[in-house]
Image 1 (cartoon, rainbow, N blue to C red):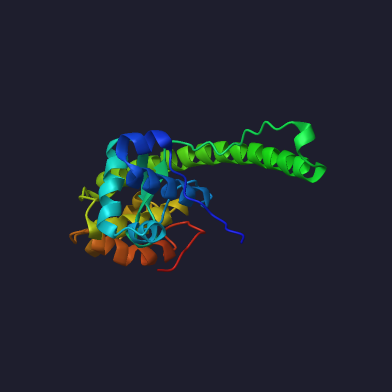
Image 2: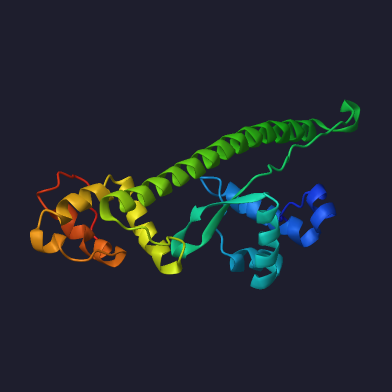
Length: 226
């Protein structure tokens, strides 16, 4: 029988927080290894499915991991799911000390291959951790830019953390990456006297965004339809 896949549990976490918290961290760490950004974007239900735990249990132990600084939020994924970046790397290296006379040639080659692959995995994990840190930093910087721009150029300072406003934020963030900004939108909005006298809101900005960047008044090559 050939079994693949595993969920690591760090002894130190198990001893301090218990096997459930430790296993949830291990599962999130495993999901982060599947992401090019090194983050876990799996829902609480999906994490629970792997560990045979209900959503409320997963949610409770994720809060422990977050409060202890073992994971940090790394933005929101598809559907508004909060993504997390694990902060403790798990060492999966293997130490083998076997006398040459006790093993055959094929086994020796296998051991050497395992050691070689382990070194590659460690290097890959280090690179992934750096990419995660860079992605988190870039996401935080972009979030600050969007908030500041909407306040300065549109006079909007909403509570971005609400469920509805988070959807608006994701919409604007995607378009900021393509170079469309609140400042450019404000230029278009105020170019029409009637429009400029209207009250503005996040809803109106999103509703008119596509029209603004299709306008010849704004020189922009990256138009993305709604």
